[in-house]
Length: 255
Image (tube, rainbow, N blue to C red):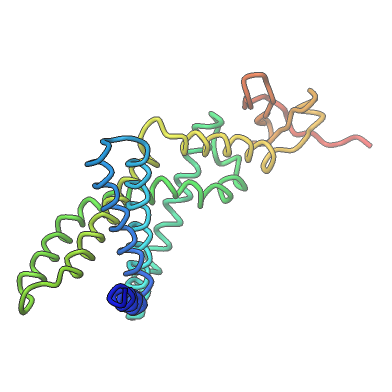
């Protein structure tokens, strides 16, 4: 009994000595071990799937936190700050272009008529692009990560500790999980794109179009002027929002 109490005390002390990221990695590997044990005992099923997803999720969260801390420290360098500014400008331009493309597909009209919606959708439209970049970075970085891990352990003095090997394996699981999650966001058919297009239609209808008795007299119709002689009409139908161009000359009001 005393031995169990002493062992429990040592385990608590060891656990307390770990930072929160390493604790997450260990928890993820415990879930992975339970997954393997469940597969061996009862085969593939819901319990095993839950354990596997839990292990991947925990290690992925740990990897994101660890990467964020590393990135924050790396960005303290002057060159890194300059590169971050350049990347931010490029990301804003790409996001604006992606928002315009989404609006064009969703409405079938020139996105230049929906300036407010373009600004509103830009951050959302960057999500699929970010997912592609994350997936590509993870897949391309995984071989280099493996080479670096093997090199580090092979050049280390003495025998590598089991705990270091466990952390390295947990990082691989987390990185793989991040790549898989990013791939799910962009894999066709994707609900993300469908959701963005739906948001684009309603955003254009409510943010960029206004009621117009002259050009859009029907109940519920809204209009956005393209030029002095052309407007875009937004109309609620049984098939959803529809957008059509209509001739409607701009005229002075007679009062």
